[in-house]
Length: 177
Image 1: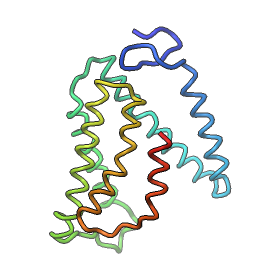
Image 2: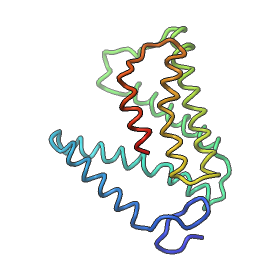
Image 3: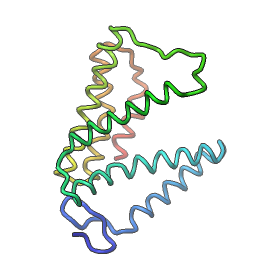
Image 4: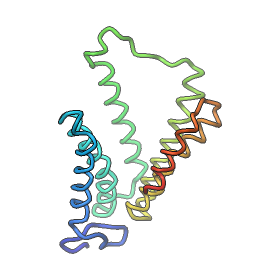
């Protein structure tokens, strides 16, 4: 069990308790500097988004460790099932779409574009959740950052168009982790 002032890692004690709040404060300041000219609604939306993404894997790891929950594929299944239901509700109830029909992909688009990328993302997230049982959150996030290269590879294998100028920012994301 972790002592006071410490977070949970794969084996117990890891980072000082104030490391996450301090890092989060720095990120909020950077986001504020970048987005303040777009209004407070945008700043709050971006901060909320970043906060949600940065805490999600920590919470999943905490549940796996503290509750001895050893079903990462079940977590992944719930993740996609709930996400799909929320997307459906938003599509059906969004008042801004009152005059716009929901776009339905053709069979070719569905099976040769959407399904391969969705399957790769599903497998990748399931593997990432399973990896949390064997490694730290930080290591799982570093490996997870490489998924954008996997997506590019699938896009190229499927013969879909890809602008190679995107390789620079993708590489920056991977190297940033």
